[in-house]
Image 1 (tube, rainbow, N blue to C red):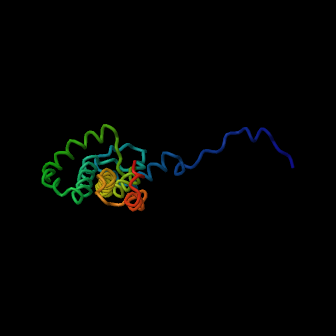
Image 2 (image 1 turned 180 degrees about the vertical axis):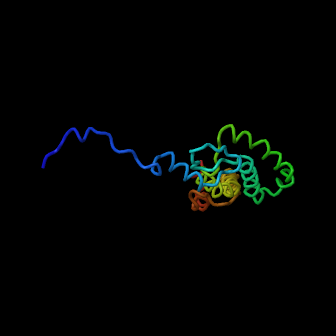
Image 3 (image 1 turned 60 degrees about the vertical axis):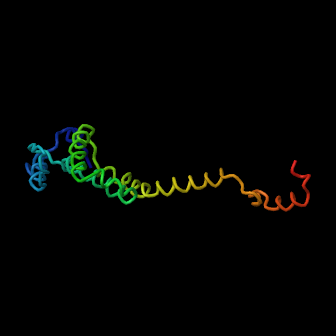
Length: 161
């Protein structure tokens, strides 16, 4: 078998027109619907739909309300639908400025859903525990560290000091 080294240096035959990258991209772009407001560039296939910051801002504000109103019902009167709409309208340009994508924050949002409802009960439990620790001992109540201390101090008054 004879190998011609000069044959290996020859350029490959041109690909058929239907297999060129530009043609493949153009065909793919025709199959992908453009996102509302997304610029249409010939030969460029948008891989991800354009972000809708206004809708995302509204969703975020409504989500926060749905999350906090059951915990703090009095907030529903403060954050009326009109106030929430105005907040969302002001939040959308900020989200656009920092290119915030709520879809990319899925795990973080689900963490908030799990943790936020536990904030108030956690604070209440800590306060109750601190109050119990700081409450003055009632006269005659057993010592929480050594319940038998009250009995011993009655029988042996000299042990107290």
